[in-house]
Amino acid sequence: MRIKGKAYINTIGCQMNVYDSEKLAGILNAYGYEKTKDVDTADLVLCNTCSIRHKAEEKAFSFLGRFAREKKRRPGLITIMAGCVAQQEGEKAFGRLPHLDIVLGTQAFARLGTHLDALAAGKRRIVDTAESDVIFEAMPDETAFDETAISKFVTIMQGCENFCTYCVVPYTRGRERSRNHAAIVEEITRLSESGIKEVTLLGQNVNSYGVKDGDISFPELLEKVSRVEGIQRIRFATSHPKDLSQELIEAMRDIDKVCNHLHLPVQSGANAVLKKMNRGYTRETYLARIADLKAACPDMALSTDIIVGFPSETQADFQDTMDLLRTVEFDSIFAFAYSDRSSAPAAKFPNQLPEAVKMARLNQLLTLQETYTEKKNQALIGRDVKVLVEGESAKQREGFDHTDMKQMFGRSETNKIVHFPSNQAVIGDLVTIRIENAYPHSLWGQVSGS
Ligand code: SAH
Ligand code: SF4
Ligand code: F3S
View 1 (cartoon, helix red, strand yellow):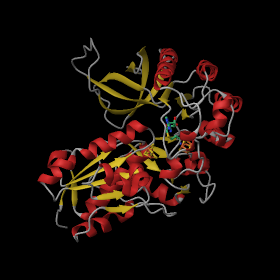
View 2 (cartoon, protein in one colour; view 1 turned 30 degrees about the vertical axis):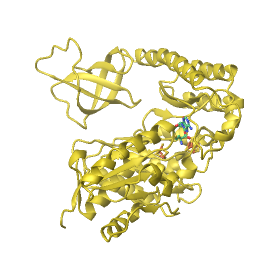
View 3 (tube, protein in one colour; view 1 turned 45 degrees about the vertical axis):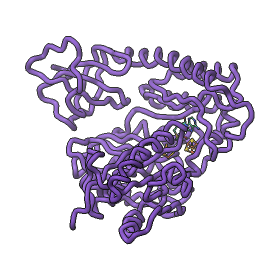
View 4 (cartoon, helix red, strand yellow; view 1 turned 180 degrees about the vertical axis):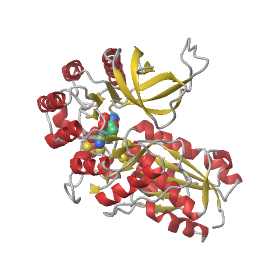
């Protein structure tokens, strides 16, 4: 195939976007574009966008805005907005970005080639935000394949029908669809054959995988993936607390390859707020699920997402969230100030809080969590953890005095970064490390038995 030029892809947003971008790279490659890391020499620039919060959306507009001038100089340059902002904005995207060539919605990826043909034939300002019930099946992405990669994301379902009142995803990604399990297992088998050791199964609510249109349940899928030879670790995200089944808890306990880490977004510790968010559980039912989890898997690491400053969140509501952090003692959290999204119902809720209040609460919450993150890391000192080696540490630890060894790093099952000296460990090895020191964001240890 004749090479048409070089393509630069910028990915903003969630792990699913990382996965989608690799598929888009695969399509572009099949169409004749080589991937480049140098945006200045690219002939095609694609931004895979996210609209979950205002800031993410602004990032997309400002990145793509940079090419207005360049496009005047080089009219042949192709600029594409793909993903959630594209789906949300459609035609309106040209208001701020008149130089854009293609607006490619979340369910239009498979038609990218057709749109590039139309562009070559002289069509301008192409918009495709058509919704589709069909899952965009995976395409091999040979060019993007990084030989040193040991871990990959695999999307197992698309869309979301939970309609949390603050969230744009049900509007940008459409109805919930589960991929066929055989296609997922086949994709993971192929990844394993190319050297991948760890997969993270992705969906907005993986626990409802297969409920509507699949053939097996999520715990059954975990079992099937665990039988793929060469795959050593399985992670998944995200589980919705309202659908966290006992069956899944047992699968996490019984399937060795499934990592001892659960990301279970709580969003708020106050029942009044949870109700307004339409989350479908209470503080009490959330805590009961956490208790079930800890009973089945005492070493399970827990992480969560929290939104502070939801419309009409009172100081007492916020204290309930602080208190929930003290009760659960998460290993880590992702916390966000509520961001008003015009397509989500909460934008019309009364009592929107001032930015300063949201920021103050966010800082308080993050400061409180630091104590627990550190406490959880400290508790690992003296213990052996299994680490999947990712490579050489970017920066050597101060006082590193092993002249005959390299400083390597990897991740524990509980998703913590572990650094250690070694002259043998190579990327992709699973090594046992005895933890000697704990820092706020990483651990230090020695290969156990050495
Ligand atoms: N499906 C997942 C989360 C997807 S979005 C779930 O239900 O947990 C990732 C996180 O972004 C959410 O968990 C939430 O904490 C945050 N988020 C979503 N919409 C937001 C908004 N409007 N403002 C601030 N944070 C938001
Ligand atoms: Fe958004 Fe709620 Fe769906 Fe998560 S479950 S993607 S927060 S609507
Ligand atoms: Fe963002 Fe869309 Fe993912 S809004 S978080 S890129 S599903």
